[in-house]
Length: 124
Image (cartoon, rainbow, N blue to C red; front, top):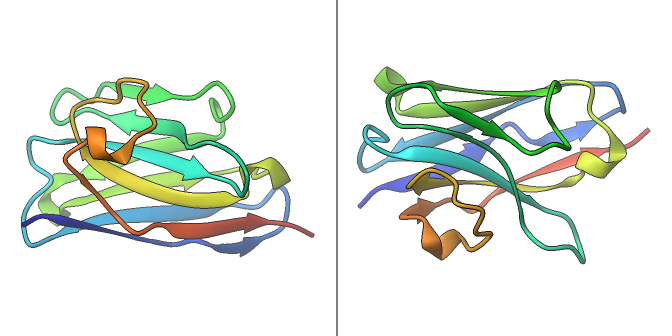
C-alpha cells in the first residue's frame, strides 16, 4: 500500500522560500502523476501544481505561476515543490496526492493516494 508523506513546511517570512517534499513509502510513485494541494483555514482546497508520471507535463495554478516549481525524482520516489517569493496568502496546509493528472477536482479521494499534509506559514 503506497503512502505519501509530506515534509518541509514551516514558518517563513514574506519573500522567503521553502521546498516541500512528497515521499512515497510502501511503494513507488512510478506511473502516478503527483498533485500538490493546499487548504487555508476557512477556505476550500486548491490544486496548486501537478507533474505527470512520465513526460514532464506540469500544471500550476495562476496564483503560483512564476514562483513555484514542481519536480520529481523517480529514483527517490519523491516529488518536490520549490516555493519562492512566498506571500502571506500562501499560508496553508499543503498535501500531495498521487494518481491521475490533476483534473480540477479538489477531492483527495479522486486521486489514488494522499498524505497527511505539512503546514506552511508565511508571516513576518
